[in-house]
Image (cartoon, rainbow, N blue to C red; front, side, top):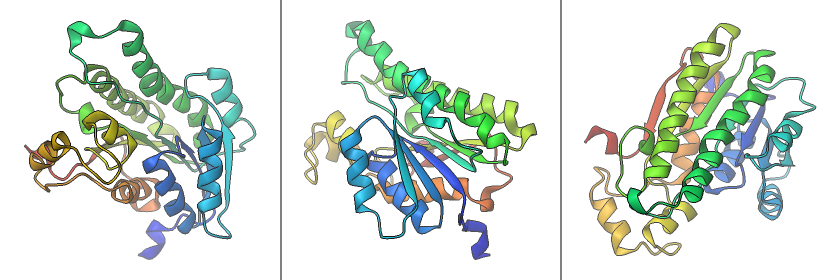
Length: 253
């Protein structure tokens, strides 16, 4: 039974692997035996992540901005195949009413969160089809529900859900599974920015949001990472085109 969750020797690319969730996921995948390639635009953060991993971890990194197709194509070049791909790079919008949203700011969020996932799929799916692999796209509960003042982020994550379902139908016959994980608020930089919190010191707005969640807290990055690892593993080999909420019950309301 333990072999179902074994990733020994599997080659997995994690786009956005230097972020709060991505870095925790990279560590977990290394612990499960995977060969991990981190793709991110932040060189300093990439180096911090790789240096923090345990001795013996098989990890490499490639610099790329997910909105730059040439850079993304180069990041995937050289692989003779992939067993897993995580599209996890994302940005939030500053809470803003729709009628006051600057179009350039709106487009920036969609460029990173939607076009970035599309480019990961475009250049990653043919590599996954060579070996029969699994893709996990990071959507959000914002891809399932609406949220006031967060229209760009919500629109982008709904689009990720659509990309996930379309890719699952298109590439399932070629042995590739494509699923999305839909976290609620997760402790880290993005949520601190949205709610005006400091690390380890939630604002009154953040505390009010926690009170609305059935589990009465935000997720920890490792809780999202574990479900992602499950979707990359043989344990989920018949799961395709699905959305996995990791939200403490938000979508049950």
